[in-house]
Structure formats: C-alpha cells, structure tokens
Amino acid sequence: MAHRLAETAEILKEFSVLFFAMRRVAALPWTAVEEELQNSRSPGFISELLAQTCLHPLCQKFPPSVRYRRLFLSELIKRQEAAGCDPLDELYDALAEVVGAEESSESFRSYRLPCGAFVSLLENAALISVGTTGLVTWEAALYLAEWALDHPQLFAGRTVLELGSGVGMSGISICRSCSPRRFVFSDCHPAVLQKLRQNVRLNGLGSDSRPAVRVDQLDWTTATGEELRAIGADAVVAADVVFDPDLTGSLVQLLSKLLQRPSTEAQPLVLICSTIRNPQTYGGFKLQLEKAGLGHEVMSEPERGMKEGNRSLQTLEVSDEDSSPPSSGKFFHLLVLPLFP
Image (cartoon, rainbow, N blue to C red; front, side):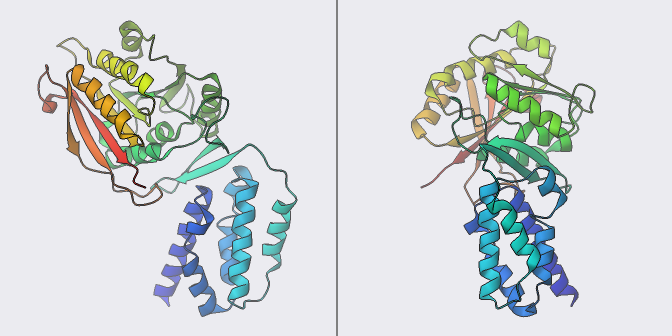
C-alpha cells in the first residue's frame, strides 16, 4: 500500500513539473496515468492530478498558455474516458474555462528547482519576436542552471555577471539556489531587458534583496575594459550566446577583457553553456578562442533533470594559455550541448 502511494505521489510530482514547464503534452507520462486509472477506477486520482496542475495556486498566479492548458485537459479527458472512469465535473469545468478564454502572445513557464520552489518566467509564445530570440527560455539556459545547481560553491559569496540573460532562467536559478553576494543580469535588446526586469521582480529579486541584483544594458561590441572592471564580477555566466557568427568575435573579445586582470587579482570564473545548432558557427567560435589564446578541456555534464530530452552534453574548460594553469583559477568552463537530428 505504501509503495502504491509513493508511486502515485511520484506520478503527480512529475506531471506537475512538466505541466508548469509547458513540456509537450504528447511527451507527458500518460501511460502511468492510464495504469493508475485502470487500477483504481476512481476519479480521485484525476482530482489529485488537477490539484497539482490546472487547479494549483501556481496556475492561478502564473498560468501556462490557454492553448497548452486546453490541450492538456483534452488529453486528460480522453485518457479518463478510455479507462472507463466516471465523469468528473471539475475536469470538464476546467476545460470549459480555457475553451472560452482569450489567447495571448505571452504566458508563464515555471521551472521547479531541486529545493521544491519554482522559477516562474513570463515568456513569448513565438520563438522570434520583435527581432530577437531572447524572449523565450532556450535549452542551454536549463543546462547552465543545472550545472550551477550541481556546483553552488562556485557562486557562493561571489559577484556574478550574466551575459545575454534573456528572460532570466539561469540567473534567477543561481540567485535562488547558489547564494551569490551580488548578481548583475545583462542583455542588449530593449524588449528583452524589459521582460527580464519584469521576471526578476516576479521572482522576488531586486536591489534590496539577497542577493542584491540589477539589470544592465551591455553591448558586447562597445563594452570597455573599464566598464567591465567597474562591475567587479568574479564570476561570469552565459547561456546560448554562440549562435550568430557575426557576434562570436565580439563575444571572444569581451571574454578576453573579462580575463585581463592584474597579476595580483584572481581571474573570474567564467561559465558558458552553448547549444551546437550549426557546427560551422561553433567551429568559428573555437577558432576565435584559439586566436585569442584561450584553450579548453572537456568537463562533466550536470546531473539534474530540468531539461527536456536526453541530449549529449560536453563541458569544456577554457583557460588563458599565456597564464598559469587552471588550478590557479584562470579559466572558464564552456558547456557544449550538441543537437542531433
């Protein structure tokens, strides 16, 4: 009996995590739901599932898109009917509510941290909006968050600068779970900065919070060494910033400036998670690193499961070849996520 209850609780938890992150409805563990319904023949499980998804307080505060909730509830009704369970009024009431609701160009995705808390982000429905890809959470941001959560000691007590923060997934996760002293989010596109500031506030972060945070506009092509030194970052993170060959040179120059410190100062930890969509673009980035005197070595992948799918991940440790070895701290990690067809 206790084993069955534990299995049911695990199914409910998994559905909750996937539902709020708006994972593909077809990819949810429906087989487990069917087995549960066939074993119990009771609408009680459906009530519990609704309480952990569409009727959960988080859904009232930060709801997934209307379309997503409609697809989810329609699939749940189909599975319930196939199992021969009695109709459940609250299930059909929930569907009726979203069928008549107006669609929006933006909605919330909420990602569950290992501590059980959620990072909730307002994102655009379209992958590209107002000329930018920065208004949605990309897979590399989830990997970066996972890696950071596996290594919180690397960020504890540090001032962290994030490059290309987008909607804020990686940075907010680090702020919530890794105890940095200060965190500086940055991006360049005005619409992204506006959404980023909104998400930072939604998650209870600000200049008076712990850690203290701020959102800066940072243009890689014009940022000076003096401007970067003024930030005072002793850790730098970025996710999915290697996608445009026209920007890789500026990124490498920026990284070089960040690593240029007096011999009396420790080099910052720099961690970049990059999805390989175009091998030529990634190859060009590595070539630029080589020209700048930055080397790398493969590291380990994160252990946690905030990402979707089972993709291969490499971590590269990059260091200034003209400086002392990585053990002295003059290095940064490059997480590489190949996307296979």
